[in-house]
Image (cartoon, rainbow over the protein chains, first blue to last red):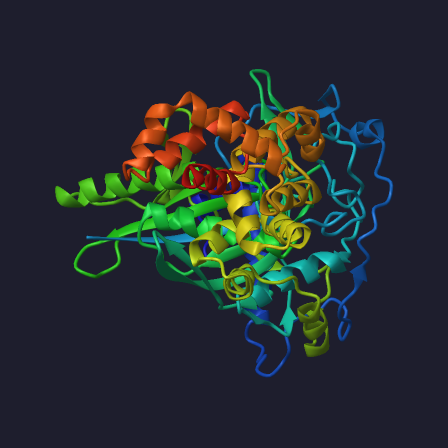
Length: 97
Length: 467
């Protein structure tokens, strides 16, 4: 699969990265190699193989609906680069998710 | 041209804790970022564990809608960047949702409609943003609160129908005690897809997101319906776009075009095991289901002899229906209870609890029925009791509103009236029987409305007949 400039830019947007031209070129080669491994993997016949399960056979792990103490506000905000009056502060956002 | 609407509805489940962690889900009025933990803040290495209660509440909804609960459902990650989503993905169910199919019936101006449900799944809510000039303030208290998303088939054909469908759904959710489903508080939120089809083939659909009131649902869909019809009428093309709705300005706001559509890169959530709902579990949930609103409505008609219309108004809110039944028990008459609740109590019922206790209303109704107080005075007393917060029967005795039942006293008043109104007496004797009504009216005035009109009428007849 060809890793076009358009695809690179799209992946950057989806990953939330902005790459320098040098980084972009290096990553383009890495991606091409990674994709070729997966192309190889796709040759395998997976007919009848069940889909991936993180813990095969484990089902229904639940919590009871009982509240426990949350983090104190200052703890929750401790790693935030910006905070104000109990809130995390992030740069202005435009549009909706 | 025909309008085709489908809805995606998000409902917050009334659990004590969040969907995947033990933080309290009662975030309303909590100071910002006081209900968080490593799980809902998306700290590296924190692992989600599913809230059993959330699943059970979701199952109630699935059963009530007649949906087919899937024996195995799974969770997926929906990936996108937005500051209200600290993990960078939302845990939802896409490929294997909790339930598929089902229907919800509702009425619009007495006409019954049925909307099919496509699927229903469990997912987590995001945090809240407050936009300011300088940046956005983020509160993660809501992040991770359990939601169900209900997706309908495109079976709705007008903005009004969409609104009534949502109302019926809210009534159901409240009766099921799964959510307060208050749109103002964001406990019930709605996205809508709408297209206008020409010649029976489906048109291009647009989406309107975040409709936060019944009024917004009807108005926003009305505006978009009109816009699409106008485009089609002049041969133009409807573009596949997403709108928001500005309720204050009453207009649609373009959010994104087809080219900007998201790529959520869903994949199976590796931190959660599959959810298996056994038949036994489902039956246990079914056994504990509250009475469904349409079953209750039907019972009100059958058991209490109410009209379907009155029964319908009473079941709109479960609290209202409960109150009605308490009043029936307190006064012993369903007809009286329905009449008083519908025509009096509802006028004063503003908040979360009834304006007067069922016992107090029942006592007042019994006093009217036993002839102890006139209906008119009872209604006035009710109003005063509600505004002062006092017991109505106390007011009755304090103000001397009890009906004059004393025969001798009534006779004394009647004789006075006869003496003062020779003209009416003459009319009566000349054969104008309706003159009695005038005399009764005069006696009522003298007694401040406290006299028993039936008794008075008999006494007048006796006096005039004996002369």
